[in-house]
Image (cartoon, rainbow, N blue to C red; front, side):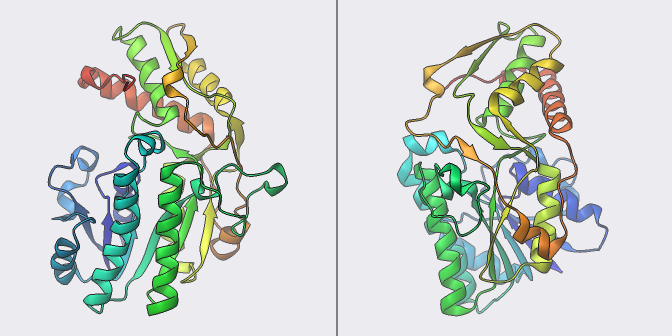
Length: 330
């Protein structure tokens, strides 16, 4: 099978490519990435994949590369995925996630290609739900609370429209909180882990800056998430959407406490107002029964293991690259 991953250089994309290679099923794996994208996450598999330079915001480049690749399966993971940043760059977020997805689907339509396509939406489409809506099902009303959430609603609906209008085999996921090694330090749990590792190495004071710690989440390991995506592309029904998420519920405070329990130095915790969002999503507990019913998937890795692996990732990164110690963008 010819498998294309957009956003292959990113957090989830690189893990997904590794997982497919480890299946040893002799698939051809192609990745779309921008010329300026770091290849660091692909260090272990660089010689086992084929990379093509294209930008999902550039329809012409997509047509040019897709004409060559002719994929049987597409995992569309490329996105502007930072919720906090979306408040500062709402236009870029909407353009990348909505127009970028439309470009990809339109390029396939123009070329008369019809692969199975995983469209990676987000739990952020649900926004701030009511307690009676928990656990959140796929038919829960969409109330996005950030420009990023709005952009993912748009991406989600564009994918549905191309199925309804052109019978393009789009299958949507709404992934809830997921983390693990390689997670960018702009995301809360990875940001905390980076700061702890930096404090251990003497790169900063043992003081952890945090935002809202009261939000409730389920935590899924990225390595479980990519297994779910692989099962989705085999068993998912085109036109449908599926919630995917972890099975262990906790507050962000609890997750931070777990990270701090692994710390080799005592750290203080300080709330930084710069890390508080204009509007926040504080209750995200998914119902994943629809997805489990068609795939049998269950998350296997416990949050404690995920968080320890995340911290160890940053310990190794900061030993090699101390300039990666996280700072708050003002």
